[in-house]
Length: 354
Image (cartoon, one colour):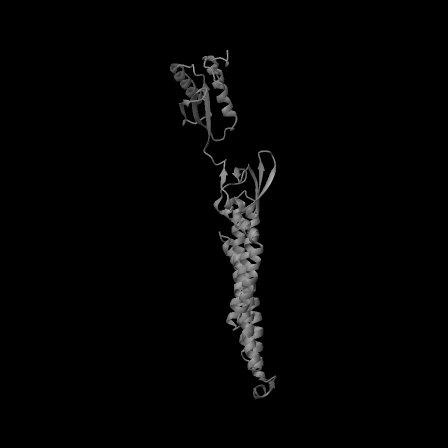
């Protein structure tokens, strides 16, 4: 024993070297045992449970925990050795940074798996392709943010000044944000569509003068097939800057009909025309009960009747008005009600000199 205490290697007694090696080897053995415990016992236990969150936790923390045990063992082992104040202080900072990185590794893996599980669950329940596109971007963004904060925290705890580094990153980030502001605006527009759901796939929408059906919702842009059967790609930021009208979401479609009868129509026949118009609207099976029919005014060349009615949701926008208009034409003609058309009456009192 005295031989081990009296014999030095690189300035440290052999007893200290043996204790340090004991910590080194012990940490490796302990890490291997813990890793095997996670692989064997805990994973089987998690697989038998009803929830899958414990499977995620067990699968993601096994390697960082084993690595943390190794780092801690090497740190405790090195604590028995001394190689000068400068090197010892440097190694202490190294171990602090390694511990911070290992903790960051745990948080990043857990957050990444949680986001993957949630995105997969939403993707199974949603018909939108934007979910599968938005998931990887969200994962990469959160992963980068966690690693950045972890490294900065580790360097700060180790005594390094990261203020200058952060200032440089801030200036670079500002320049990058200015260059990519349109791209970022489209990304946030896609997130807004995903969260607020102003429309879904297949809906007919009107935005910025474009009228058509939504065919694809992406994280940067949305594709709409117009009524002319053309495919239009719209950047997502327009859906936050412009008024979006969801035609498909309307409970029923409003239709207004204005009829002009000739000025020689008597009040009694006006009342008959109003009764006919009301009966036509009410008896159509594809119109709502809510309707209004009235004698709306005196035009330049006609007595005007107006009817406002609503088409039931799901019925074709053109078929029902066509049926109503054809019924108006047949029944008004059968009743002898004449429609007015633009006319002018010119009165001549005689030519000059006649």
